[in-house]
Image (spheres, rainbow, N blue to C red):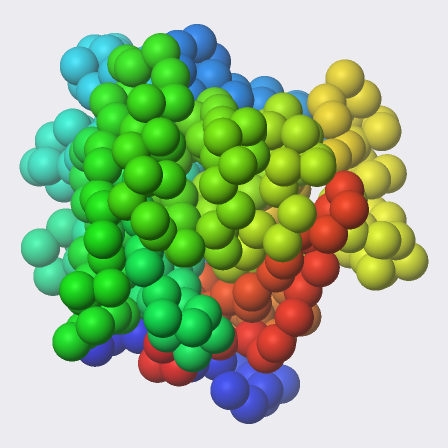
Length: 406
């Protein structure tokens, strides 16, 4: 486990909040991609291919920046958001990013999606000294400012999430026999390492571990193998398409284990509903954002504001897809980071401001969870709360757990 995480216990002082959000409007300074009138941001997303369920994230981010521009931009500058389809294919991501950096000359990239795809551009972005900000992947490698000072994550890391599941399994499942389905890449491996670390001396509780390739048409044969192992716990590390397939197949063949689903596939619209609500009852996952289908948030100010924004600026998108909440929240953080840069829109200052949040309250994040970063802390959000699927929505339970709590 890493040592540069902090828990967010206690409140920020008024002075700290003021100092973290103050903006300096000194002499104007610019890097490529910024000017008196424009801020150019690059982005890649799988609008096609096996992970295309995440395409809604890119579309909602586009809608977000369009709404910002309609409201006057950021410190008087319009955001030129350039998003390209990489199909969740690392080689294609490399092509797209080279175009964005070398031809379009963007100030930074933002929320590029996928662990294998971001891994393919990780060294390049740091060699070019171009900010790779708030990547849409929870791999733990994105919080390593010593070796990769130009890359920062956003969401809770997969390793910590898996440790929490492991601890919960050991505490709540009698004589657990764990079966693991894992995407065979860095994304899957990060969760797997977390599960192993969380189980510790009880690693022998894992009775079956199978993988799938992102290019596979289905994971049905893998699920049959998992059932045949005699497992009574299913740790499901898969993207929405395969998550829906695997949960539906488990029900079809009469396998009823305790199920733990990775957070990145917890969307009701893109995973739970396609799997069949009757097949996903009591599935557990970790959350850090409000789920739009959870009625406890109906009167919440953040949820009302998000719904109003969606109706006005993103009306074609699903109000039950948690990916749209994710896109809105991470875009709000990027918006605030750029705002804090003032007239010094250099790549160096952009990273400096990204690494200078103290208990920042981000819209749509669960109560008790805030954003904190520092020069040696590139993990903006490091807390989650467990939730269980009931009926047609998620129900939160237990306390907010910080990284150290795992």
